[in-house]
Amino acid sequence: MSKLRASLVQCDLRWEDPQANHQHLETLLGELDGHETDLIVLPEMFATGFTMNSREMAQPMQESLSVAWLSDQAQQRDCVMTGSVAIKDNGEYYNRMIWATPDGDIVHYDKRHLFRMAGEHERYGMGKERCVVELKGMKLLLSVCYDLRFPVWLRQQPTADEAFEYDALLCVANWPAPRRQPWRTLLQARAVENLCYVIGVNRVGEDAKSMHYAGDSMLVDFKGDTMIDRAADTGFIETGTLDKDALDTFREKFPAWQDADRFQLLPGVGH
Image (cartoon, rainbow, N blue to C red):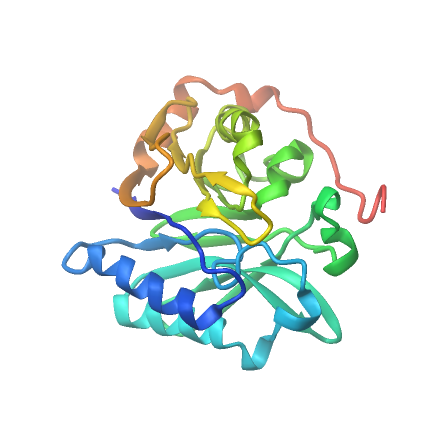
């Protein structure tokens, strides 16, 4: 029996103040002390908020205090920690999702779709590679915020000898309240079309640009039903369980995947 316990951390963020956010998150994560979890999911740019000041705020990957903090928390809490950080690497800037394991390993995914309406495409580099990680017998595809609007990038792309590429889609975000309905709808749509669990973690509060965030962090099952859904505009930490056996059973009883279209992504199209 393969089950994955995932803790969703919906919270406010301190603007462009990594140290304050680290301390704030440590206090919040105290709620999980004494509770078992396999994965803690923080919002997009958890150390700064959704800043476009990449030249000033991005931390060098090898010297990043936020990546080090995330890794330390993973080791202290004996679980995977994930969220995205503004990173400088090889002369380029990235909105980089970090996957930090309790063994000290670091895997990353660079956000592919950059939110041009905020000028993100002018301040950060576009990611080139998808990233699938594995935890407790489940495979998870990593994604960041605006990626959620692009179903082709997130669609199951199994090899010729497999039925599914991943079992859960993980999306961290700073998704503004005026567009909360698309956020909620797309999380459920991605679950239904990919026959997978979806974890979406968004922030709350208001940033320095007076942009308001309503949260709506959710855990959605493979049928599109919500397992965690806090519509209230407040912070929370809640743990849900992803059940691989239940997922496999549903995929067998409702094998829509057998009629899916095979396709190949062409790198850089449209850019």
